[in-house]
Image (tube, rainbow, N blue to C red; front, side, top):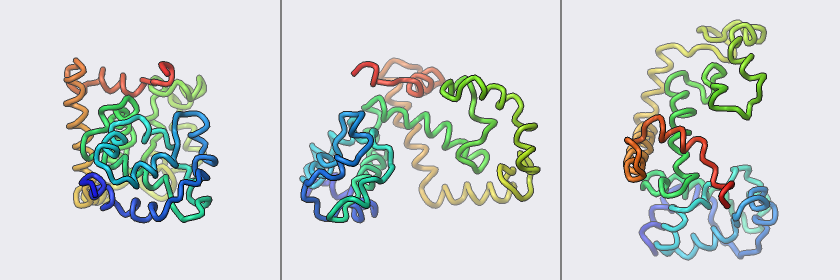
Length: 231
């Protein structure tokens, strides 16, 4: 048994999701991502089951593990009760913790996720805050979003009186005590260390690629890069 497989198998999601694959291919047949990407859940499960370090490391460095949309269509359809989506989650986490994620274009986008959704959580308690969804970073939102962004207080006040303020209701401002508790949860659960790892490995890779560290230029490049145009 390989050491990387041992590390991977420490993840409860892998132990839950990898039971007795018979390579029937039902997961691949139902997978939406497999229709659009060079992505085959059956092959990933087969590769993990080999328990070979070189094979698993290649997955951890690859674009492949970032194609999954986590829809979990695979879970209810596997005749053996496997969940390839769980295996992908385990592979992604191990890739992030060991720093292999920076070896693929899609993997490097983890920095952008950490600095947008991750830092939204740490600053506000929410994954997404309308005020923080900048039109300049999200042109896919369309031209109307600029108007919503510029008039968010008036718009969201029609739905909740607590928008941006403490009190009951959606989009309320979390209290200082709540935010302190949230930060404490991240510290004791390893979340802060995990975020620090993303920054540290990204900093190293950015300098290897000729950037002045994981600065704004690097962050924006990994945020906007789409290798589909090159494939």
